[in-house]
Image: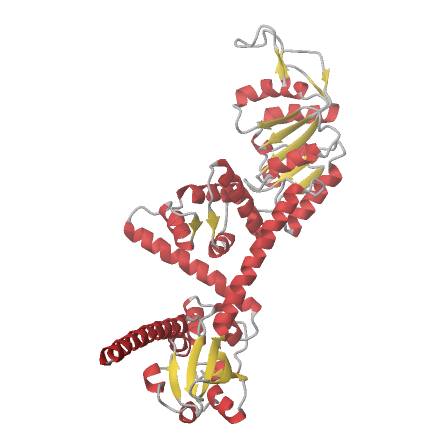
Length: 487
C-alpha cells in the first residue's frame, strides 16, 4: 500500500517536473520573442509599476532598463515631465494610443493595452512603442524600392512596345523626348542632318533611328568615321578612283562609298576631322549630287542622304579657319543637339537597369545593384556620357565579389581604378563618401521645409545634421522650427 502511494507520488513529481520544464521553455521562448521584437515593449502591473521592458525599448529611447524595472510610471512621468501611456491606461481603464516626444526631439507612437491574467486575476498593461524616425526611414526605403520597380517596369514596357517613340533608345527625360520627336519629324525627308553632342551621347544610335524611320530604311546605310581613316585614303574611300590613277590602285579601279550607298544614306561621323581639301569636294557633291572618281573626268550622279555628326564646336572651327564656312551652312540644315548625360539624370536609372539586364544575359550572371548603389551612380558625373556609364556597369558586374552589389563594393571598384597605394585609396574613399553625402544632403534640403523634417527624412538627429551641414559648408535653406531652435 505504502509502496503504491510512493510510486504514485514519484509519477506525479515526474509529471510536474516535465510540466515545469515545458512552461520554463515557453517562458524563455516568449521572453526571447519579446526581446527580439523590432517594436519597443513594456509590461506593467495594474497600478502602472514597470515589470519588464525589451532591448528595442532601450535602443529606441535610450532609457536604462535597470532604473525603470520596479519603478512606478507615475514617478517616471514626473521625472521626464511627460505623459506615460501606461498611466493613461490606468486612468482611463481602456486601450489608448498617444504620441510622445522626449527632450532629444525624437517622436514615438505608443499603443497601450490592458489585459487580465485568467489564472490569478491580476491586471497588466502592455505598451508597444514605435520610433517615428525608423518608420519614416522604412517608408523612404519602400518608396525607393517602389520607384525602382516602377522604373524597371517602364523600361520593359518601352522595350516591348514597338510603337513607342525611340523604343530602342532608353530614355525618360523631356530633353531626350524632344530630340527623338525632332528626329521623327525630319526622318521622312531627304534633308541633311547634323548631329551635335559630346562623345558617348548616342549620336550613332540616333542616326540609326532616323534611317529606320525614313523611306531609305531598306537601302544601304554606310557609316564613315572621318577621324579613323588616314587622310591619304579618305578621298579614295569616299569618291573612288579610276584604274591606274596611282601606283597602288587596283587595275579595275574602285567604287567609292558614296557610289555604293546610292539611294541610301551615308553617316559622316567626326566630320570636323575631314581635311580641308576634301571639304571642297564634299561641298560640290552636296550641291550637285554628283561625284568624280580620282583620275576620272566623267561625273557620276549619286542620290545619297548625308547625316553628319561631331563632338566639336564647328562654329569655333569655322572662325579658326579649320572648317569651311560654306560647307558648315550646307551641312547644318537641320541641327539636332544631343544633351549630355549630366543634363538628363532621370535617364540614368533606366539605363542602369538596361545595361544590367544586357550584361547579366551576356555573361550568364545574376547580379543585382542595391538602391544606394543606384543613387551613388546617379549622382556621378560621367564625362564619357552613356558610353562611360555602359562600361562602368559592365566593369561593376564583372569585378563585384557578390551577386548583390553594395555601395562598399562600388566605392572600392571606382577607387581602385584611380589609386595605387593604400594611403591614396583611403583618401579616395573619403572623398567619394563626402561627395555622396553632400549630394544626399542637398537633395534632402530641397524637399524639406524644416530642420526637423530633414533630420527625420535622413534618420539622424538634428545636432548630427547640423554638424554635417557645417562640415560640407552647406546652407540649410530651411527654417528651424521651435523644436530645432530649443536644441
